[in-house]
Each structure stands twice: as structure tokens, then as C-alpha cells.
Image 1 (cartoon, chains in turn green, purple):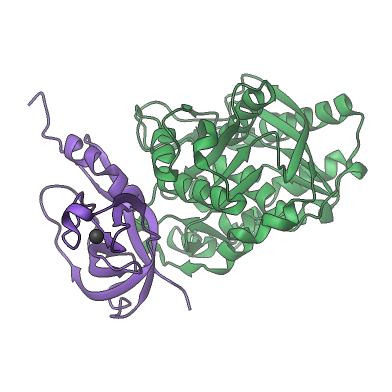
Image 2 (cartoon, chains in turn orange, brown; image 1 turned 180 degrees about the vertical axis):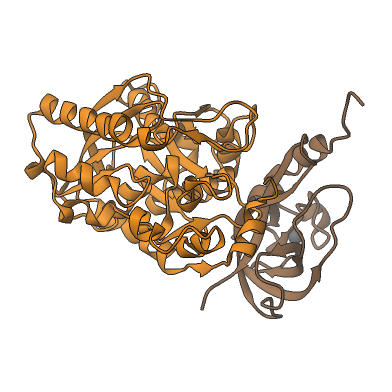
Length: 340
Length: 136
Ligand SMILES: [Zn+2]
């Protein structure tokens, strides 16, 4: 029914991080990520969730008291125990008559939240559901993850009337794959190095995507746009090519070169950037990925109402244009990077 | 120490004000109040008080930059403290998120949702409204 995005204003260039760690000048080119979004000192995944949710409410000018469920997906919830959704509900002015829970599934917790809302709405148990993917991701200083771990979020309001886009079908694929993890109490995640590519990202994204197209009897040519989870700028074009999608189809939603990997926000921000320019009747193919590992695929058709409400809230490109750059010293202060 | 001193109850009571600038409006004389008032000094017994959510846009009346945090809870320093006149009239004290030196008297601001402070590593996180300069 509506969507909203928030990306913090600050950026650091990947070249600046590489300079500090003397990792050479080809890091940025190798990852196809040029800069990443950095939260302000007083921003976390809850404040980003609130700003994105407020933008979604504003965009469709709906009464937040109609919201019956808030699911927030993140791997950087500010509290270990106290749901982020409670803060979001109060901050956007819902009634207290809603259910809430925080979701975790690495980078696909946001699309899992969309699925949960979809189920409650489709079965008429609630009027509207609010699904959010938000993260202020951390990479250990000097680790490969530090180059891309970024901050941002997107919120989607799911309903059954006044749609701006219809979710036609979904398909998920999940296995037990230890490609990336963080143990309780540890500040930074660990990853399986080269293991993260082939058996994790490519296998799960491709399996979910092919599964959905088989279920629907559709093929890449039936879609105007495609969005894939974007941990860097290299993986999505490669998986798109393997599946038969073109560079043009993924271009509008491929925002990782300019904002970095926003983890739970990444696929949903990519979809938002695509909705920012999609025309009524066009179709969007979306596949997320979360380490651990799993993928959720969605087939979406845009409706006429998109043109009416699109301009009521900031577009993804407005956030990309409003960037302010930090050097590494300022960046370290922003991230509170004192653990070395 | 088994328990920690927390201001959670006091903070909790102020959540509507802090998150959404909920104040009051007197429909009899059209005066706005923030923080909320249940009586109107203009109208007294004839007051017609209603809850009002301020737009949050306003103007910087005066400001200062604080370089050392108070001890009651962790704040990020330096930060800009300003008296802001809301478009509806009332004045309040709030933080303006901007590099020190970029805050100017007469500057237009709009509200953002941010962390106000934290009760150390273990305590609660205070969220609420701060202000940022309106671009252009
Ligand atoms: Zn009055």
C-alpha cells in the first residue's frame, strides 16, 4: 500500500577505508561499492526504522491507527530484549491495538517481515501491517566487511485495498549454511570468507528465484525490473545474468555502489528505488538473501495509484544526492569504533 | 550493586511529548501549549483544552554548543542546544543536529527521531525528537 525509506546523510568513501588499512586502491573497484552510508552518532536501527515508517505513512496519508501488526527485521536491534517495533509504533502514532515482534534472519529479516504481514492481511486478521528492514551494520575495523557494512532502512505498509503494487506470489528457499554468523555478545560478525559466494548467495538466490518463476510459469522477460539482495555491487549483476535478467532490468534497484550494504534494508531499499520510477502495469521481480541461509522471492505488479502518491515522501535518489562525506577519523567517532 | 538507578518511569511518562511533540491547544482562544497544559491562563474556566500534535517545524531563537556531558546520562558531545519557536507559537529547548558553527539564529528547523541519551551500557535508551536545519 505504501513504502518509505531512510538512509543516513553521512558517507565514507571505500577508498578512504582502504587508504587507512593500506589495502590498495582496487578494493572499491573489486567490490563495485564506492561509498557507504554511515549513521550519525545518535542514530540506530530503531531511529532509522521510525524515519522510514513515518515516510511510508506520509506517502499514502493513511491513519496509523489502522496498523494491526509491526514486524521489524534487523540484525542490529538496539536492545537484545525489548522489541524495536514497540518504539516504532509509539513514534508513528499507532493505537496500542497491534501485535509486534522483531525478526532476525541476517539480511532477509525485512522480507520475512513482509511475508508475515502479507499472511495476516490476506487472511483478514488485520487491516494493515507494517514491515520494516533496518540496520546499522558493523564490520570489525580492517575486516573485509568494513568496506561495505552500511546503515539504512525501508518500511512497507501491507494492505488489501488502495494498493500501489500487488504482490502476486512468493517463494522461499532455506537451508542450514554457515556462511556468516555472530554469536551472542560478540560485537562483530564472522564470515566464511570465499564460502559466502557460491554455496550461499548464488545458490539460495537462484533457487528461490527459479522456484518462483516455475511456480508462476513466468520468465525473466515477463518483468520490467529485478531487484536482488546486494551485499556488494558484484554479486547482483552476476546472479541476474545467470538467471537471464539483463543489466537494464536491475539498474534502477542497484543502489549498493552509493550507499553500501544496508543488510536487512538492502533488498527493500532496492525495491523502493525501483518503485520510485516504475510505471503502472510494470512488473518487478525481487529476491532477498539472508546468511544462514535463505532467500525470499516476490513477484510484484505496480498499479495506477503509484503515480498519485510517489512524490509525497523522499525518493531513494534524494537520499543519495544529500550525502555528506566523512574522513576515517570522523567515521570512527560516528561508529563508536573504540574496540580494536 | 544489584539494581541500577534508572529514570525509566520518568522518561516513560514523557514519551508522547518526546516522540511526537504532543502538547495542547485551547480552542477558546487559539493558544498552543508545549509542554501540554490542562488549564488555559487566558480563558481559565472557559478554556477548551484539546490534545495537539505539533508539526515540529520552527525557528532557532538562540543557541549554544555544549562540550561536556552531564553525568545523569551519556550524551554525545559536542551538541547544540537551542531554544526553538515552533510555528504554532510555543518555545522549547531542543537539540539541533548540525556541526557546531552551522546553527544560526533565525534558522528554520524540522523534527527528526534520534537517540537523546543512554543510561550507560546497561540502562535504557532515551529516544525522542531533535531538530535539523531545513535545507535551502
Ligand atoms: Zn484559552
